[in-house]
Length: 278
Image (cartoon, rainbow, N blue to C red; front, side, top):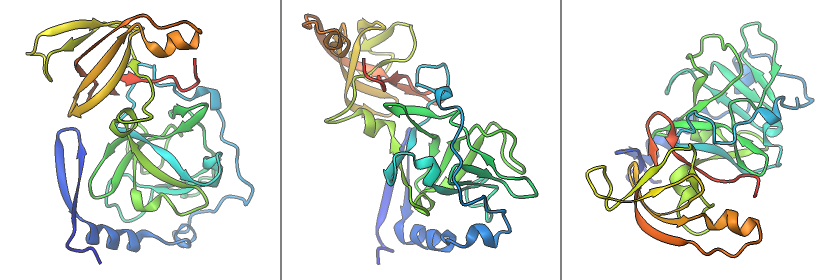
């Protein structure tokens, strides 16, 4: 038992302590392979639906939020949408789901027939691999997810719904939460650049009150070295090493280290990476 163990998750500038024992008890109360049928929700046919709109998936460069992270495939087939079952709620702690993702189908009940899911509203995180954007993550395990599936009866507006991290392994495809700071930091992190065409300041410290050391242009490459909230210490290559190498050229630029603003509450990360190679 780990009921006395405490854990914390850093999201933005806040840290919430939470009892792991209490979280596990909440998970046990919600988990049930029979729950979909028990709620009187029409179960889709056994045949899986192939999600539509693959090429409409976001690449991360659009002027839209990419949230705090995404739902990644932890285990299961590559075509995870056709092998996943996930309940969604209008708010954290709600007793009953408002909709289900069920093996490629979007199931809402209330007399509405199941309809195929689409990839719209998702983001490419690897080569042509689409995943749900997570717009908020709480230490009690509740995560807010952006979905684009049209009107949802009894649902919150703007396509924002909630699920719990303990409900991401109910089927063949097991999902997990990936935060952008974990993706962007450490060994194996992808080459990063700013998502927009604006110049961004490289500063001497984590804040606008610190002196500007340089401007970061659109073709510069950013490597994060540490993160402090919305600010990160970074190494900037001018021009970027990745794109020069893709063209078979020898990089002969320069590097500087300093601090950058890497995200904000509205758009999430200001940085992105090439998900389809050069």
